[in-house]
Image (cartoon, rainbow, N blue to C red; front, top):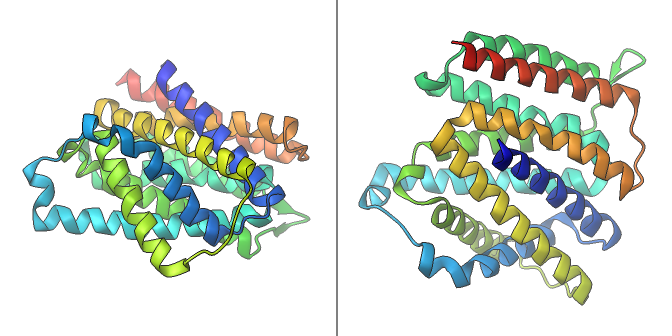
Length: 280
């Protein structure tokens, strides 16, 4: 139980620091995508030799196609997410980002028979309604292009994570994440070709964020293999709780009652899903 909670804490910390870099350091989303993945690759490179594992099955045509599809979808997810993060308050974006675990659960239930529970569908629908309600003001949905970008970013992240489950067993968590990030870095470098210099503090912060993301993803992939997608995703719903706290304390963002109620309903739905999952 402690490992997923740690993972949720790490995710919330990384997102808060990313917002700090992109907002106060004025690093645009294209440059941050390239430099962020470069930092991840550099952080992991010294350890790659010691944790390297690729089974022969990973090199089969079908599995290579799945891997490169994951890379492509990951690029879209990250670009859309960073684009939205540059503009919106973190506490406003988080309810939209909370759709990611719901998307992940629904996709996992559809694609993997071992993950299917009717209770998950029902609770996911309730949580989705709570998310939509959290963005209604004066009977209008408050969705602009940045919120929509965050929404699609969450969907693409969910697709990526569910697809990853099918080939994770051919790697270990470290190797899989290293190769994924290396490919994303090379492709985005070729597309965006950033020519921006950053101060030492910004570079240091990006490296810290990279270390946090590496730790988070390894924990998540381990959870997928050991406990399944649904249980792991449910535990990571604790991320919004930490993010609301961090956004209030460190970014001085306003937290509304509507956001808090929305988050509470989702957390309750997830807790109920865990209880029902273990009851049968």
